[in-house]
Image: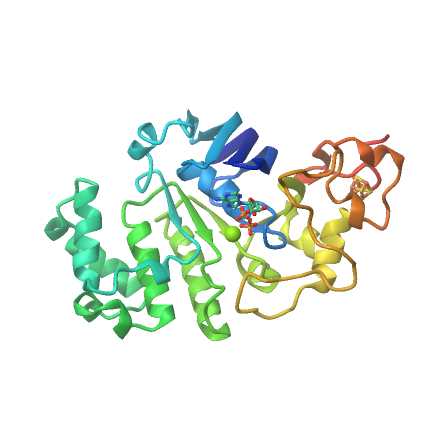
Length: 320
Ligand SMILES: Nc1ncnc2c1ncn2[C@@H]1O[C@H](COP(=O)(O)OP(=O)(O)O)[C@@H](O)[C@H]1O
Ligand code: SF4
Ligand SMILES: [Mg+2]
């Protein structure tokens, strides 16, 4: 098993109180697995991803453990995590493309990044060039400024840099969202290439775009309002979902790429609850067409058949 997350709970500390963005997440990721992580905006996808790699204030680790390749990660200790970041676990963050320094040439940026990790950039150059070939980028990009590159080129460059040290786990947070549809497909295929060539062992692909996940993910995990709702093989999530939220998500999300993060469920009223003061019990309760008395308690995330987990009193087999 590549990754095991147990009871992970992470809040944001704010002046108005704790934002309960990730509640008791327990799941695992198999060796070689590409797992999609989906759900509406604000449901805690980036919080989960960031917790695995850089749990910095205002984020606060409440409880839970993360085990990567049989080793527990010191996620609550930012300094101790330096040893694992980039080498064992790496992230292509949401908005990474826009965060590139416009006054630095790409090669210079790569060099600085490598130096900050104690790697001699000259020695790493041949491998860097091999990786550029892999994502079909000309070696001349190293002499370019970010403004001279298209969105797709920048995204591929960020992917190359974040995987240069062959991390075990790669977290890709909305990396296709700002791209046009054909570039989205190319970037998604490259992620699969990284896994197939064993540059990375497993990948978590965060997106609200189910069509991308259908193409590349082995399994999909659905989150709602900071809680895990369902996890199963891609086939099962798309064709026979059990959680009422997953069912609505599957039928209401656009089939081809949307450009940004602002996805709302059509056909069911309301919005996800604010996580400063979330409802007790199942957080989907207020929007759920099947809600009944037992939903006042938090439904456990149970395995209803091998490799299919659901948190729902009605559909999950967790009999009330
Ligand atoms: N820095 C922050 N301070 C307070 N609340 C935050 C912060 N970042 C995110 N949140 C809240 O945490 C919840 C989950 O956010 P996020 O993980 O970014 O969702 P997603 O990636 O699924 O869109 C949201 O309710 C959001 O408002
Ligand atoms: S636990 Fe209840 S409210 Fe939550 S999804 Fe299931 S039926 Fe709906
Ligand atoms: Mg996000």
